[in-house]
Image (tube, rainbow, N blue to C red; front, side, top):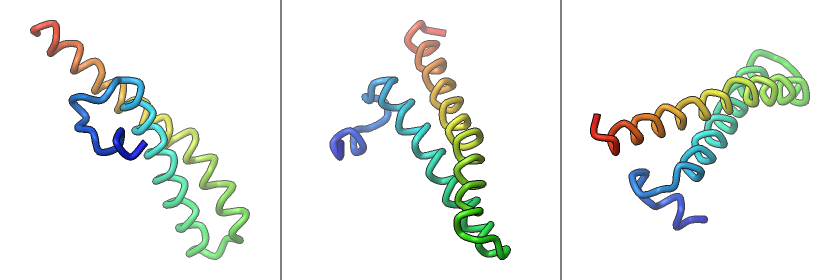
Amino acid sequence: MSDTLLTPSSTRSPVVSTALATVSGLVLVTVAVTAIGVVLGEEVAGALGVGLFVGIWGGAGFGFMVAAARLAAKAQESAGH
C-alpha cells in the first residue's frame, strides 16, 4: 500500500486515485467536523456522529467528484483534445 501512496498520480490507476481521494475526503472532513463540535462543547460521541455523517456525505462525495474530474481530464488528454 505504501508503494501505491508514493506512486505519482499520473501513473496511478483510476480506481486507486478514486479510492485515495474518497478516503482522504472522508477522513479529513470527519476529523475537522468532530474537532469543531468538541471545541464548541458537544460531547465526543455526538460530535463524532455528526462528523461521520458530514464526512460520508460531504467528504467522500467531494473526494469522489474530484477523482471523477481528474479521470475525465485524463481521458480528454489521451484523446488529444
